[in-house]
Image (tube, rainbow, N blue to C red; front, side, top):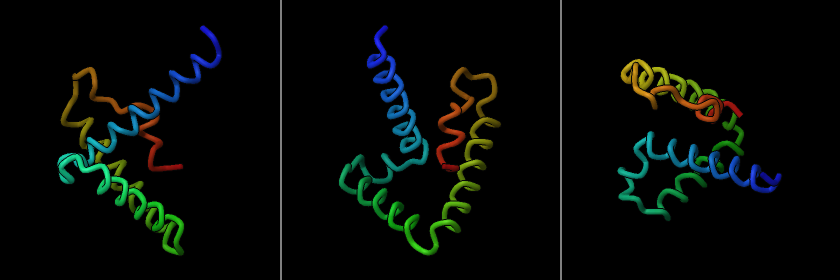
Length: 94
């Protein structure tokens, strides 16, 4: 397989995992799958992270995300999709 194909597959997997987080958070259902609303919310989050409250917000959101992953894993033991991927584990930490 060519290098560009490997990189493209990695990128595709990463995008799918990020989309999964949006779905897991309930954003798609809560917005009626309205892409403009979802983008607006993500832009608001980005602005918050750039603000003087960014680090505090990141810490709060990371803790909430870790709790959600733990709760999901605890309620879905034994299922093949119960364990979040490494990307999901680190999504809120970067």
